Length: 135
Image 1: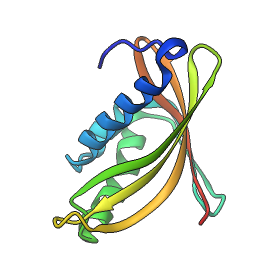
Image 2 (image 1 turned 180 degrees about the vertical axis):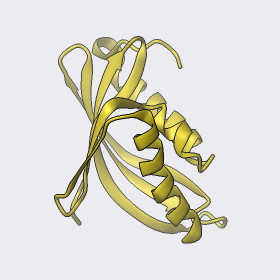
Image 3 (image 1 turned 135 degrees about the vertical axis):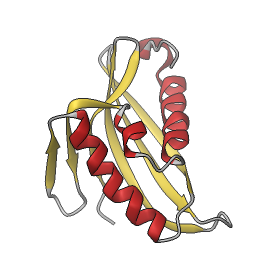
Image 4 (image 1 turned 90 degrees about the vertical axis):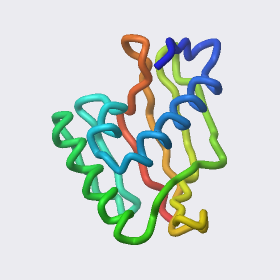
């Protein structure tokens, strides 16, 4: 990953982060996605339930569950849309995207809106927490 200076380049940094996230997703490998997350990581689901992961291994297993189900459901790729970014201080930002999971014909299998609290640490952007929006 390239160095990120959120204060001066937050929209470009968030775009690069999510573009790289899409690349990691298409591997369907929870370990590759887990590399993009801070430990600990907190996930808030659309029903208000909360999961906290305390290790990279837990984060990878968490995402592998979703990836396996998405693949079973016919998902073969993903993209995002409607990126909104709000800087929070010099080293964090709040980014919200609409995820679109697609089948091999690029038809949407499922979609949802999700917000991310992102931290720039050691020249890498990492997810501290995420919140799935209720429909």
